[in-house]
Length: 253
Image (cartoon, rainbow, N blue to C red; front, side):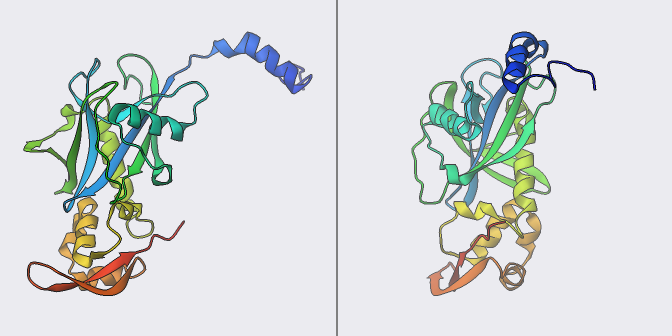
């Protein structure tokens, strides 16, 4: 084996040489974090976006996010960025890495790699968002898959791909697919719900991500997901009748 500074001497000696002679040989991307935040509000699933205050994509909708600081933990970075731009404090127990994206030229400023997070606001976590930093305004948008396509609505405006900055439309689709793919075995999206709901409410939640569940009746839905829901013995009044309520339990992987 040929002797080089990489395999001879101590590790300290190797690191000293590497930092002095090698570390600048490689082009380094900037690293960012982005937050795909979900909540349940008045019977609808919503996601939190900002409108960008500055170029690039000034005035476009975007995730709350930004650049990771030197030696900063990624989980802390996404919580910091969301709080700086929206004033919303994320619960670290309800965030998870979704995808890392490094598509060339995804950011017109420079080479960036982003780590996107799924973030869930629990039902009783009521916070008033306020735009700051790079955000001109904050927006809770209704989100669902409709006829196999992503539907994103801000008030009376239905958004399309070009209304979002960077590749955020594609990342939103990835988030919806991730949640859809885990509904039967690890439905963390349930954490945005009240602790007690009717089967119809749960079915509508699942149908936000997979329309097939909207075609089921409550009996078949419960049969499919009996491992998730437990009957409480209580009832609530609906528009047509009284309906039994159920709690949910997400088993750890």
